[in-house]
Image (tube, rainbow, N blue to C red; front, side, top):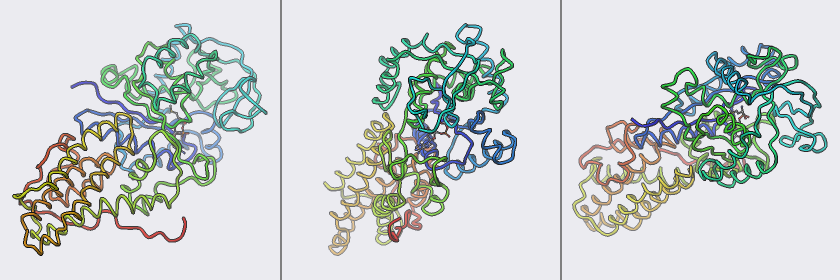
Length: 515
Ligand code: ME8
């Protein structure tokens, strides 16, 4: 067995519960994992929570709790939301876990002994919400360049990490590995940033100012900077440094997923930390776009964020997952509105996919008493549909190479649209009047086999709906175990099998006024 496909999401701050943005990264990662599994790859999906730092300490204080007790409560909420979203992660890492803490201290010691960490005086401007330091040159009007909130001037002794030592090596790596940072234009952003001298990274905070952090092993007055601690989760969650066997199976990560807001820590600090530790770099860092409303990023600190659970309760999990991945190209920003969600459900899922399944199964019941008919007389239209369906596999692979979920789903929808048009062209109601039952038999067999392929193809995105389709088509097997190769194989649905027509997969939703 080869290397396990290893995929990660950011570990989320626990100063609030998850919203649509967090659910987006989770659904994308979950889809990739299921996609890889369908291709026979072992896959390991790491997610978790980032529990140290001032942001969390402040939120805990507001709630009248100790940070760890506060964290314990919120973590359960995160896990509950991921469960509702059917997120099949393998390990949930918490940065307050003893193994992670021990490993972070091990890394600090290692880099200190190597001479990559040194003590120095820091004076500059600090942004508490972003937990970032800025120099005079980087700021305007005393506002944080990232979040535009006021900065605090600070002077203190800290431990610094010599980023500049690895700057050229990182630049070369980015230039010679086009898949390292994706989408490609993000790599250019990082390279532009790396064109200027890289300031050393302050990797500690004085315990007198922030006590909620990992104790620095060689300096009792300091705790670890939350980003330095958090980024290490990707290796500590994969067994580093104590479980060598696990680490060898997982590392390097195949994909680190996140949104564009945290591109710099992931594409600058993280690779340099790995270089300093002599650890191979991840294969791909993919920064997707933001869900926005009214042109602004949806975030927990600004207004009421969109709640995934509310939407799932109203519209169903599969529709929600589909919308997230179909609506915008992965990598671009997406404008969220409930109206857009409903429109997408009605057009793609109710009118196209749901309707195709429903009308095909209704005809199988009506003309063949609910058994898949045998295709004896096959014509040009049937063969055209078959050819279109068989080509689907190639389009799916191409789309997923770039994590282009919308193109992936568009390719599936294009087969569904062809199948719906094929029904109109074949006009079974006329064939029936003409007594051409054998032509209807071929048509329905072809439709059923195409629907079988569609179920496998949509499974990574909509596992629930796909399994429902599978059942309705009378496929007895467990769809979760079916391999993607079956999408390209024709004739796997068996004539004579009884279908189990159920309720419509996606009922149409009425739009009441503008939402
Ligand atoms: O940054 N649109 O945690 P965080 C799309 N703890 N994705 C969004 C989003 C939006 N509007 N809002 C949030 C942190 N996300 C650090 C990470 S990793 C070592 C440490 C998603 O809770 C997206 O994945 O602020 C983004 O990168 C992440 O949530 C930020 O989560």
